[in-house]
Image (cartoon, rainbow, N blue to C red; front, side):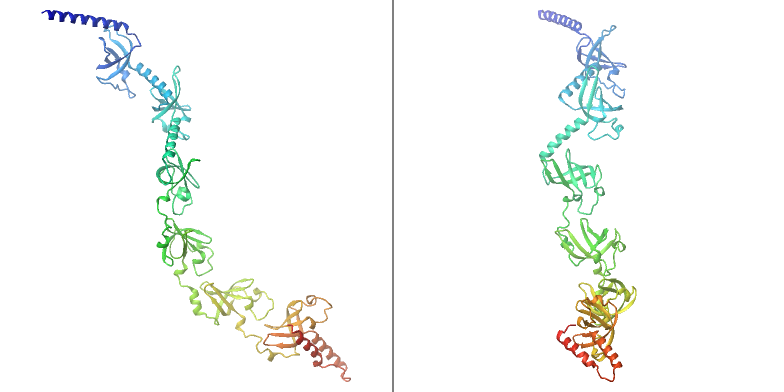
Length: 571
């Protein structure tokens, strides 16, 4: 019984102490105090919170409303609140959650500014020179601080949730300035350090095409730009990077070279594949037929793609047996598929020589059989050169008639005076050089050598007419018939009185001379102007003085000249 009385007394004492403590604590609560509590009920317009005191607190429901306007709160939620007053009717504490939230967000802003911690935020609208960002409080994001690169479409950023760095705070004016660019630069620099620390030559990485130039492309490898040269994009033909790449493309590359001092790196795509030239001689044996696509036509031939990265040259000289092809573009076009023959391979220089005419009969083989040396051919005069003229035989083959094979005569006549383009001529085949593709012809040899039987047509002492063909320091040559020339030595000319023969004679002059000697085997004839003159003078004297017999015979006149010719032997 005694114990029961004591227990009751203790309970009454405890209750009295709690009442006193509560009254004391309630008296000590002031507006602005921050408390922690738990939501115990939610009604139409208020949230009741137990803050650990005898009297609960009341918070307006709208303070829990989100951006959509819908209240986000549940019974049992713990909240931090501020005392803002006391309700008179029921004695409930009037509390505010938003005021505490405001204090806490500014504390967070100060901390993040001091420690450089990134803060999440939403770009809510575009304003003059920048954006308004919701980070719990409104912050200003200058347009220059949005990105590392210039912003081309500002409105595309509105509504995006991003991370920012707080760079300036004025709490009194409630101004906050943030930067996304600074954060991106810091992150880029961090990735850059990690990259140079961990990356080695030969590594394979993924990257994005950041920029394209005429000579290559810049690839973002994650904080560091690698350069992809034009020639490292593909083993195949390429004239511009845009043929294979687009800005923003993700590509796989191999690290080719790293210059740590200058922080430069070069990458390649084609190096991820085997060089097709390594076994090109095995894949395309010489003399074997191949098929390829025309990828380029130039003045000197055609480039043929046999496979990606392997091209061969079909030279203009290997396109046809007809040498008249001057423009390869008139024979083939870009994109054409051709059947060809492999002529040669140079692996060191990555060159393959191809031929097309080799798949067609060689007209030079037929020429050897059809026109052996000594046979006669017919053809039309095609063109003239300083050394002769070309005659078209057919199948693209031209025969050359050299100047020396035009005529037995050595008189200097212009070929164009003797022949005209398109004229049909006959010629004798002299030689066929299949290797050098030379076909030698002669017109003069269709006629017999005029020196043959010369002594039956001419005798010493005969007076003949001829054209001067050339003049030298020792005399002049005279053509007395086609292919037959004789020499008038200086000693057999009329008195020159110390002058050069060219001062007395002119090329193509028609003159009369007397034959002094004939050497048919050596093809030499000695001629004299003096003997002719003396003969004519003696005939004149003979007519004037037939009775006194005072005249010389022809033998008397020729004898000294013949002796002198035998001694000098100059023709």
